[in-house]
Each structure stands twice: as structure tokens, then as C-alpha cells.
Length: 246
Length: 275
Image (cartoon, rainbow over all chains, first blue to last red; front, side, top):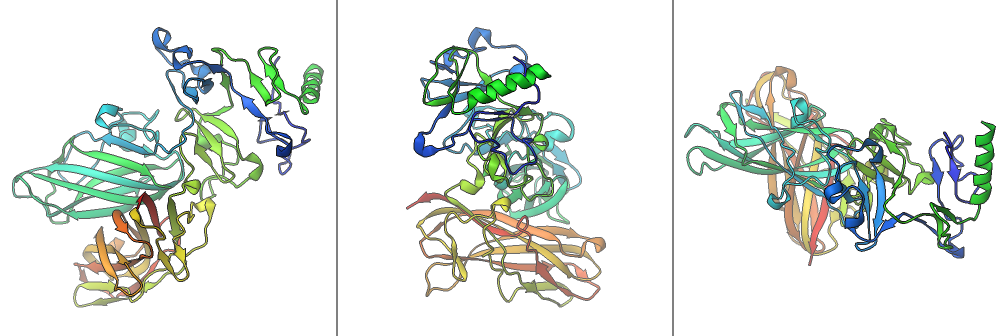
């Protein structure tokens, strides 16, 4: 049965979307009309265990199955709803917030005192590199997108920048830091006093607090105090950690 | 078309107070709709990106219009391959707790700004005689919520002993050091008054740094940082802004102001661990 452009209403409310000019925002309502008479739910199809999910194990697809993106199944043994992105299954909903993404930076060099930081999208959970905030999911790994973190939820973020600088011995500025851009507009520049711990290395570790809106992207840049060293390297022993605070 | 209308009418009739089973004859009185168990799943509507979500409005502070009738809505976003849920204010990733309902966090907007007058002795300094007040009303569309109950009469104070992550941000507006070439630093200092009778103590002072050239002497800078600190119940928080310039000023100095926009100016706290 094909029903095109339909709005299906599984309630006895004639028009639950009564504030709208017609049912133009909701395709299907499954709504309780009277909680006192007993709440009824929407029963997703279920499998007994995760191994029963389709397209897993030896049946895992080699390329994305486009038409199955968003497929939902409930797993009885774990009590979790799983979602299929066309390649792999993951939890569709979380009870507790899984709210910290952490990325390693690619090494970068500069002769001008500033360098946009290339953010590697590699997920390596044993080494604490993960992206539950989906900041780099489906983001190209080349060009300008290599430097970008895409905000998926409006809110308040804490962004920790941990940079390892190397350069010529004795030539470093005492103050090094990072700039934070939102949609290519500079929002902050934080400077930290640094310690020259072996003559050629300095580290900074700083935290920004930033309010960002869904759809915006954040880029980061290393900076050196004016009149200080302009030639240095940022090594790949550098990381950015993003925590969704609110 | 007539057939479709007829089918719709039949479905609509059947759906009133019905339990609908899809895929088999296993109606349960506990479900409105039940889809047959097995290895075939359910796909809900998708959008290629968030701008196609219902109630998208780029002019809204959180990108979406408020709309109570859509609460509980689900939609799949192909841009980042996850479901989003609508909470009456905005669409949020289903894997995340919505910011406005995070029980251990607050974000307070600026309710009363200040002016920051400047003086010059060849180089410029701007010091605030008072501090900005962060007691703006809650606004869920701007993710301004006080779930920790920090807002008190006339001040911001914590209500529970614990380790907190405190984030502060302040936008500077207006102001000028006149024509100059050099460096201007916009500083924010977080201070705590641990008890009602104690003095204010500086916890941390951070420098937001501006490489200032002649074309960049105006304000509209934002300074921000985040810091972890133990705070006892009753401790008051405040933010002290200041501005200094090491550049040679060739023009008149004018006072800076503070930006009341909640994107730029706020104090936020997250309770990491209560004691």
C-alpha cells in the first residue's frame, strides 16, 4: 500500500497539529489521548540479541546501504534501541549523556606565528579518541573541512586545546596559545604562560567556554605572542577535546 | 487518487482508538502501533541536513521555532547519521541529553552590564569599578537555564558543595584606545567569595589577546575561559573584566562596554561531583 504525502493519525484527536495551517509538520502521530485510561506505546520490531541484527558479522555490508539509513530495531537482551546508518549499528538513544569527543591533531608547521590546526577524525577508543558528539562524522578529511568541528546541537561547549610546540632552542615566546573561530570569525584568543622544559619544546593546555549553534563549525589556530617566535611546529602529540556542557 | 483517499479514510477510521499491528496479527492492548518482531526494522522520516527539519528558523537563537505540538517528534539526519528528538524548543541528537534539561548545569545571561573607563599614561589601561551582573531570566530558546539554582537575590552563588567546571565569557563593546599599533589584552578574572563575611578572592585570570592595528582599535572582542574549582555551598561568583594595551596610543580613549547578547556574555557552571 502506497500512500503519498499522507499524514496518518493513530489517535482520536481530529487534528493534533491544531496550531498549524494543516498537518504540514508531522507525517504520523502515535499519540495517547488519555493517560488516565492507560498509556499505550509504539512497539518497535525486536530481535533477541545484537547478533540477530541484520547486516552484522559476515553479512556486514562493504558499502553503505543508502535506503536503510535510519533503520531501527529493539534488542531485547540489552534493552536498547539500535540504529543502522547503512554500514554499522549503534545505540539510537542514550540514558546518560555521552558528551565528550576527543581528536588528535595532525602535525603542522608555520613561519608566520599562527597555524590552523588540522583535526584528525580518527576514532581509536583504546587511545581515548572518540566522537560521540558527531563533530567529524561524514565530514570530508581534506581541504577546509579537515580543520572544522561541526556543531550538531545548540548549546554550551568546553573546548580543551592541548598543544605541543617544538622549535629552535631558546627562541620561543613565553606566551603561546590558541584562537577559536566560529564559522571563520575569530571569537577568542587565549594566551598561556609556558615553561621551556627542554629547550625545544613547550606545551599549552587551555580551556575555552563557547556557546555555539547547531550547524556552525569551529576551527582552532595556534598563536604566539606578538614579537615572539613566528617559526615553530605543532606536533601530533596534540589534542582537542570537546565537552558538551549544556 | 480516489483509491488513496479511500484507503486513507479506512486507515483513519481503523486508527481511532485502535491497536494497529504491522506485519502480522498480534494486536496488543498495550500498543497503539506494533511492528512485528524479526530482522526487519522501522525507518522513520529523514532529512539530509538539519535545515530541513520542521520548524527550522535561522533567525531563532537556537535555529528552531518553539512548537509544543511537535514535542516527542523524531527525525533522522543523514548529515551525521543519527536521530534527533524535538523537545518543544529545538531538535537535539537522540544520543545526548538536551542541554536545557541537563540537571547539573546552569548558564546565566547578563542582566546588567557595566562601563569600563580607560586612562592613559602613554599606554592604556581600562579598569571596571563594578562587575557585570549575571541574573538574566531563563530563556530555553537561548539555552539560558539555571538547573543548579545559582541565581540568588542580587548575586550568583552555588547551593551545593562540589567540584564545578565554571565557564565565563564576556563580550566587550565600543571603546577605543585611539589610533595605535600594538597589542591589547582583554582580561577576565573569576573571583569567589567563599563565605558571606570573607573578601573576594581571585581564582584565575585569563588573557584574551588581540593583535591590534589601527583598524582594530574598537571593541567587539570576546574573552572566555573555563576552569575547574571546588566550591562550598554559599560561595558567590563574580567576573571582573579589565583591558590593557602595551601599544602607544595616539588618540583619545573612550570607555568600553559589555555586550548583553547571551552568545557572548554568560557565566556557566556544571557540577562535576557533589560532596
